[in-house]
Amino acid sequence: MGLMSFLVREREKITVYLIGDSTMSIKETRHYPETGWGMPFVYFFDNSVKVENHAKNGRSTRTFIEEKLWQPVTSSMKAGDYLFIQFGHNDEVSNKKSYTTEADYVANLERFVSEARKKKVTPILITPAARRKFLPDGKLESTHEVYSNLVRSVAQKQKVALIDLDRKSQELLQKLGPEASKMLFVHLQPEEHPNYPQGKVDDTHFNELGAREMAQIVLAEIKAQKLGLTERIVKPEVKQ
Image (tube, rainbow, N blue to C red; front, side):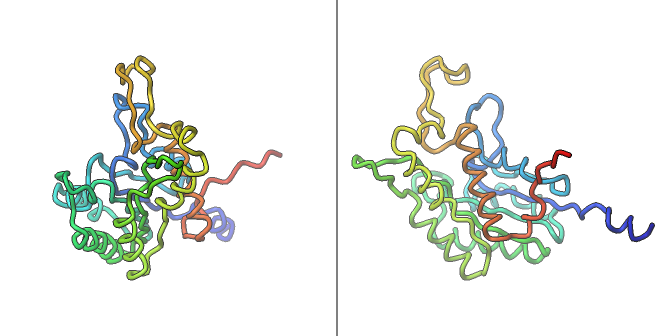
């Protein structure tokens, strides 16, 4: 009986924390169909995983710390948990209040990694998702080159798992091309959606389909890199 109870014992429960910006965050109903990729991401795992999405619109690494959004995350993390870190959209824009210098961006990423590891939490760095910006010749322009490279360098230096969402999402957008790629973003005609009666053209934020595609990229990388979360991904039920 003791052996049987051991075999059927539930897997130890863990929490996956997401910290980042609007491309990852949970959206209020009034902003739909805008969707952060962290929203569909929660459905990929079995009941041993709780996903806590702490990403916030408009935040950079600096403002996430200054506004004390990081403090509750680091206070509640425990050994065995995971921390997904994806910033850059707001850090890199020099005329935004959220602007973070390259040196401070690196220092902040290293702080997240260091404080996670002190609590025996596994940090995973993610480059910012690509913007939809095509050149006249149909080639997608890379808009995060500098800050994505900084994430890659921190991952290499700190020996942290890296999910290169920038490159992977660029590949997807380039494959779809200038027209078809619009279906992943918030592109609405006037009166098409009650939340945006004047219509909207947004090449940074995703709709439900785009968020799901970004989340699928992250999931594929978790599997490809054989990260510890792989064994906790939902398994399809086998019909008898």
